[in-house]
Length: 203
Image (cartoon, rainbow, N blue to C red):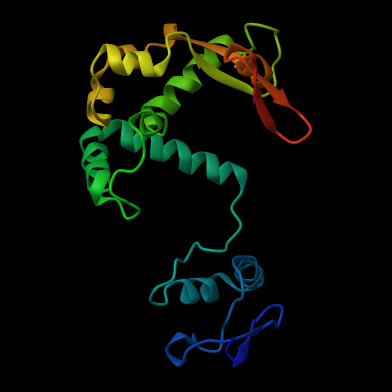
């Protein structure tokens, strides 16, 4: 561990910084401390600090829930009206172009489950049913495929995520129902162990 040569400007925790990392004597050990300093500074000082090279002038500043909702709605509206840009942006970070690409080691089934389309499908199913259709519970709700995902992949000869994206059968909400975690495990012949969150297969 390197010998500390400075300290946090807020909590005074000892830190090590390379000479080129010093920022006018203002150092932070975490984002929380940065937020505290921003909160206690004048707006002009915040703006100056945020405009330093390599920094974000909004980073560390607490945002209100109203502001977060407004920003979220604005982003949704933008991407809904610029679908071509959304597709282009996705292509730039998909598959081997993604920074965490490891040669395609994920199975197709698992890969499809991580797609945005699948998240939207699950949300739509849960929004339609609102409760577990088996027991009526409103907690820990999950979406369940009536026709298994693996069966659909085989039936329509889906080879990759692009094939999955074009398959309407995959995203048909009539092929899904809402179940709570316990009922979902029972549906797949498994028992949920509430004590240690492990599952056991029924035999």
